[in-house]
Image 1 (tube, rainbow, N blue to C red):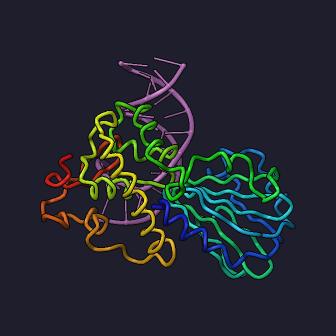
Image 2: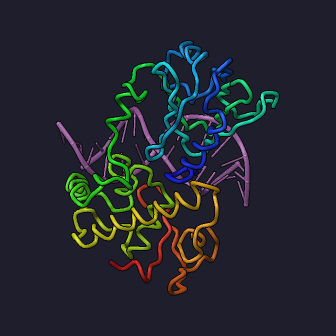
Length: 268
DNA sequence: CTATTTGTTTATCC
DNA sequence: AGGATAAACAAATA
């Protein structure tokens, strides 16, 4: 579920814990969310550290703790964060519980495609080096036409749907955002990267920005409803129709992902 | 019982 | 070599 704005929404769920110190940590040791990151015992090194701040980069979250320590979480397909009372019992898919002074912060993920990593190497801002080396975010200055041209040159025979899902170039874009961008730019999802014109890339750039901005404002805050004239509210409904021309929408697997598009207006 | 899932990594093929 | 594609991961839901 979580793409750019949903990740931002969940990141804020831990805000109530800012300023509090970690007293204990509960983990589901067998959970796959720890598989990628071995040294599990070292997770206890987070005890005694205070939660200072947090930030998102695309679909990744970074929690900055005191003394140069950090914790990073990727929500995968079904992950979520919540804050709860200290007494609240753990639920089935809770993999990590940080017990602070007045509340607990919980990472839960039924399908366990999420990932957790942590460490104590960081610069003076508490930010680890690997985080600084991430590609430019969609709403930053460096996300520009030049970068999109590089992406299309590198991935010439990749269809534009799959291109938009590459986090190296489009951090935070996921399945629904990619479909929304293509629908709003009227570009067919199967078009090859190498066939895209400068104008089309420019349109994609603009829509990446505007869709991200609106999603961050609406979903990233209270998870409100996106505009009804977006594809989003029609894409999963059986019998869903294009909000522009009423054409029945097509749902088709493209590059392994279910893709929804309008066969009539996405004709570029 | 089968097919589906808003993500990413790995293996395999080209 | 490096890009494109399919499979794998796991569990809920229809």
